[in-house]
Image (cartoon, rainbow, N blue to C red; front, side, top):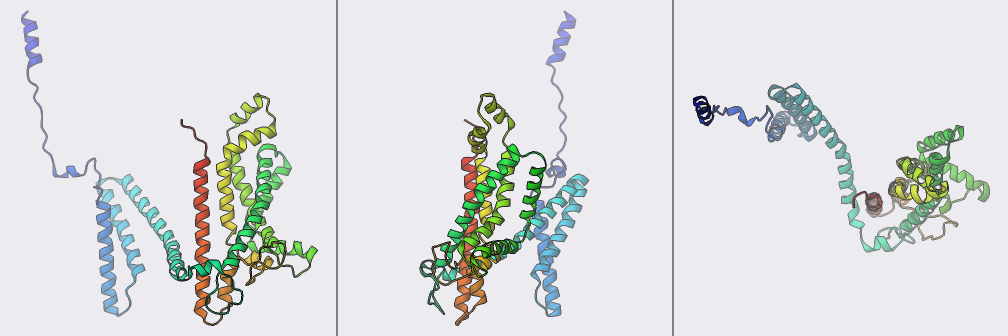
Length: 373
């Protein structure tokens, strides 16, 4: 009984708690720099670099170098943040911060020309973004005024014809390579598609021009010739993108269809293509965006004109890229009117390409397989 009473007293006795003092360095939880430290170091580096370049410019009487100040500030930031991280956090975290800074700097450097081009095109092209530009052609216009309606119609018709030619051929080629192609023939086709992907656009234009010159004479200029030239550039892109999407379809889906007695062509039509339709459509849209801005093949095959032409199989046909080129190359009086029309057409072309890329992303989102309920 005495032993049991002593054990109960020991159990009920209060336990002494050791309270350790909080040091000032507890702000670095787990030996990590605060989140604001990189921003503070970056701001201090840029301020110091700008001050240094301002003093040098004032002392030498030269202009202030913004690019040099930003570059030196970025290098100073990388050096300071790496040394500070190595001192506090360790070598691995210091290397991580250094590489993160390099990747971020490379991204910002790559964005500089893109932003510069966008600002330049918008600032120069918005002046002629009016109703007349979208509703009139250049027929009988020698100075101010005029528009690019004939070039818009030509671009629409030529690109549509090229898409009608390219998509069936490219899609059926990719289906053959994935579902049927075996042996030497499939390897030869794959090799030729890879070669066609890298050919210059001017070569495609010369090929289409030479092909139609055999039947219509050496001076042939028609919209359909330009469509054939663009299809030569589109087909390899459609083949490669569609092939990759078809290969992503799980073989289990095909095997389940075959097990039910469904023939192979119907399996491709009802199972494989619907499963990969989002990726295929995205590839087609990107192929269209890739060729819609080509100038050299259309300049050779479709030529240029100042009048409306709705017939792909008759006479010359204007397109937006060629319209930009002709406005810059054949300046009249006043010259600023030609520059404004060229910049406006360039801005319109960029907006069309952006819309196609956005539409491709939306299609990929809408038609992608939904696995959730």
